[in-house]
Amino acid sequence: MFKRVLIANRGEIAVRIIKACQELGVHTIAIYSDVDSGAPHVQIADEAHALGGTTPIESYLNVARVMELVAETGAEAVHPGYGFLSENPGFAETCEKAGIAFIGPTSKSIRAMGSKIEAKTLMERAGVPVIPGYHGTEQGFDELIARAAGVGYPLMVKASAGGGGKGMRIVNGEGELLDALEGARRESIAAFGDGTLFLERFLENPRHIEFQVMADNEGNTIHLFERECSIQRRHQKIIEETPSIALTPRTRTAMGEAAVRAAQAVGYRNAGTVEFMFQDGKFYFLEMNTRLQVEHGITEEVTGVDIVKLQLRIASGEPMTLRQRDLRQSGHAIECRIYAEDPAKDFLPSSGVIHKLQLPDGLRVRHDVGVSIGYAVSPFYDPMLAKLIVSGEDRDDAIRKMCLALQNYVAIGVKTNIPYLRAILEHPAFIDGYTTNRFIERYMSEWTPPKAPPVEALAAAVVHELPWKRAPTAVGEVSAEADPYSPWKTLGPWRPLGGE
Image 1 (cartoon, rainbow, N blue to C red):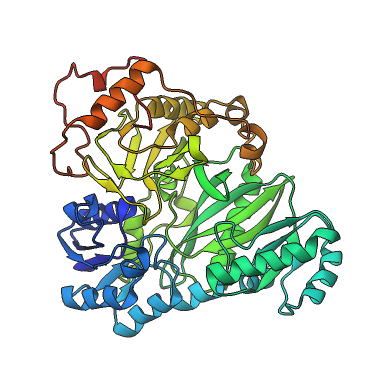
Image 2 (cartoon, rainbow, N blue to C red):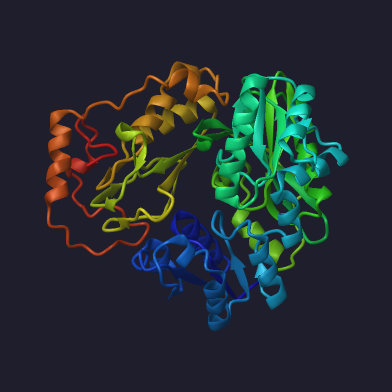
């Protein structure tokens, strides 16, 4: 096992990785931007070093500076978390050439799966079903228009290097196609520096189901079952759960085997996720995320496997002792992503100082948190503050537990999406399992944020004006009150949720 690991990330995922390393006896090295000097991941690491800068490009995406710190600190390995440099093949290759272990796949695998066109071609060769479409290299608009006739309408125009919905268009007929191609190419070039496009049949009402895979350096490859990630707003996942109620045991087995074949087709190692679209009992390869996923925690809850520790062991050269026949799912887990954003203002990111943070407790209630009291939420980074994960005996139990946990979640100083998450979880369609990719469009398009009761708004305003002098707390210390009669610990109806 490594002795010294540098975590090239921030927020809750940096905290998660640091804790896993420390449980293995590994010395942790945090890095931070000027904005993050007082962040929880800086406080709990064994040592921390400044990157400088405030924006991502000046700090966590600055490969030269990150590698300087790797050399200065004597780190043997780098864990990139997710986002930032995690799927950057150039960074992985730089680590490889420097003799530094990159805790993830090889640069070759990242490159192969980074191009959606190349990935789909590889999957077809490996016998993994793909959505019918055109994935060729001829990129002239005339060629794409001609190919679209064979794909059929409605179809989707997608950027080969895309992600997060950028460079993506739904086209209902030939008359819309040219404008969609031009718009998608412009957006793709602006976002990714690559205007390569492909076409695929549009699935009307699919589910987004992904399989967690793990592979060691000896070629042993397993899957840790599925996660349903269909609840998405603007192509961003906000609620995930496992297992998926849409899968029969036979389909689950077939999809898991396809995910393993997909990983083996690119000589994959470490943690990755194979994503599928699922509709009418059929599944199709969507893409492969060559990194640890945000939602890995719900898989850990139902399988009992610590994915981050397994990543570290694999990267240090240890073979996996887990075999597919040994793995089981137990219970049901749900994750909600807590974002600093204002639902009343079209989910505009919200920045400010967190004056109060009280997390709900309970059996099998887990918090992956990247902020603390006194922490200033910056406009420079992704607005996700934390992940709330609950596990229950079954899906109904998990839903009830999550609703209660969100009801008791206190975050003052920034607006949050907590009211929106509660509305989704309490919706009859969610409870009944109609969780396709069109859930938000069908059931939440008319939703408006509830108005805070006068006493709630008053309490929040008073807290906001208090002269808070307390320094940022350690990540496990989220409430300043030890008084058991504190109103913040009362289950009364006036508790402020998700706003100032």
